Length: 315
Image 1 (cartoon, one colour):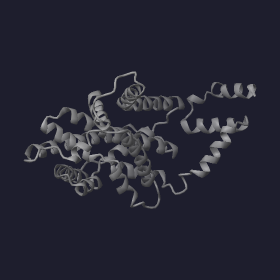
Image 2 (cartoon, one colour):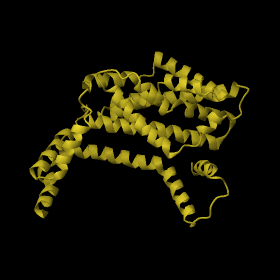
Image 3 (tube, rainbow, N blue to C red):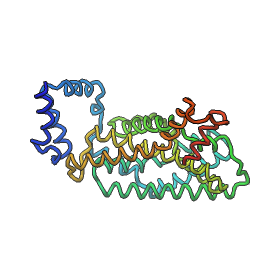
Image 4 (cartoon, one colour):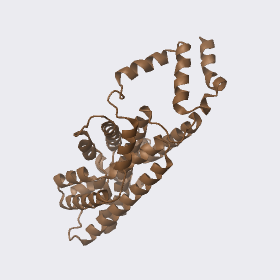
């Protein structure tokens, strides 16, 4: 048994696997695992059969074309974005859930996030640059238009819909990640899943927290601005993370032929970014555990208010 483990540990050193292209390296590792009789290789094959996502997958050319087209921020997409901002701002201002949902459905923000994710997995620097610039332009337009709206509107008082976007929770992380998985699966199928994308747009709200940032800027409510901005970052980042993972599983072909060593560095950066993004929640959780164990004195505020206040202070 120890000999098998030693042999397996020296696979990468003997064959210089880390310098091979990613897919070729992974295939080589799996073949070596099978030769050595490792149970992990058999377990992987069983899981792949059960959770196969390649049966109804569109061609890589179709996936690439769709991802790049959805990431464009010119012409019709820009006009749709402007409409989504106005709809979301009015819905938040009037505390109308129906109008806010309409803005989520109209918003094209998720397209640039998925386009950037595709660029990362495909090692396509041009797509990454175009999508990231487009996303930043969308964010700036959204902040500018929503801020101008809330400066002009006579009703600047916070509504329940606005305040609800200023205190993110760990549920938002789970929803954004699950929504990102559903979204990329729907985008990469041969058949159209017309009910999935609208559902993902509603679940992973991107436009409402961004317009809430505009309200916070217009009314100089900086603590609410940080909370809404953090919610937007969480939703956007975990959609990106889910999309990267799923596209990597689908073995999207790479424009630049990355070695396994280079791909490992990219994965390490993504892991560190994920930890950094979750840091406020991690700190808040530690504080609450210490309070529950009487290491720290409990707060005088009710539990919900403690969560919102602590998160705002942490940000």
